[in-house]
Length: 440
Image (cartoon, rainbow, N blue to C red):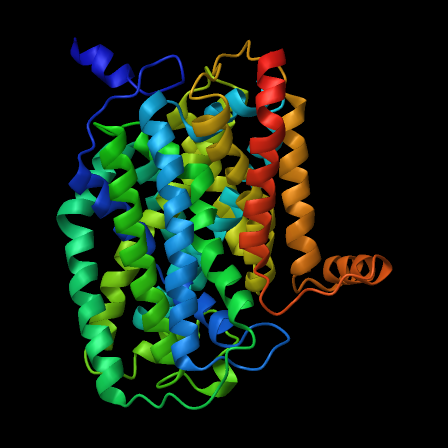
């Protein structure tokens, strides 16, 4: 292959994805993606579930293990499909919904990725300002620019993360765990009554990456390493940071700040050497922003396959940075519940149809015919999620609470919206899928 052709590989969807990522590369990538300052911010919703009494520390940790574990398993399954096909995530969904039908989840994923990129850039800029000082606007622009540059050279960025950023983040994380525990852990009191609501929060973080997973695993050397690398890497990274966030909440974060998404970063500055650990985590945080820029581009290419990835990355980076500059307070908990409601049932349908109904015989071309029946189990799963967990967005949650009242439905304490939504969508796909597959 000539140097010119090597430069052309991967620019758009007409080029074959190079298979270069090893098991260690993927453990490193997903471990690094799980190490993020946004997870300790979500830990407050695990320890203090919306509308219920606070959980005990033990209950919160168990909720994290269950939620992140289940979500990482689904995330690994999505990665495995990407490695088997070599196709980006949204292109994969042509096989499930048809080419035209795949535009529906593509739009949802575009909105999610733009939102996450802006949130990541904002978290980075606030943390950098807390450590170094200076203009928040300049830090925001700088973080957005760096994430965009990494998205232009994604495979090289993954290798850099493996060699340098992840090692530093692991050292910083080990120190922070030691320092927070040494600071004095006061577990306090609590109960298990909001346990499944806390699980829904914990599941949402790995599930939010499921629509992006194949964008990276398509470069995997084998499907097995894609599954194992994704599962182990993200579970260890995200699980550790949830626990770190929970520990910080019961030790160094003041109660009046526990609803502030930036409180964790600010609280680390009271620890000896906390400023150095936070600096390392700020550098590592760039990978989440770059990953969301890259996957936004991959989603756009499902709609416009021949558009140049590098030019799209620049455009997406500029838009996301502009959004970050306009954001002040993010409805983080509502955002997580929205992610769960949309993508948990979606990937139940994806996994069941691929492995048990279609047996991997998806048409991923632009000529893929519309499969309208797959929208039904996805929609049912979405409705089940909302009936059990209406969320915390005022108008939206009130709508679903009124529907619950109208149909005389009261969610039982043992119901997890995520698990029930996944099972309902999966079972419905398994029951009706074979009939429609035969018709096709």
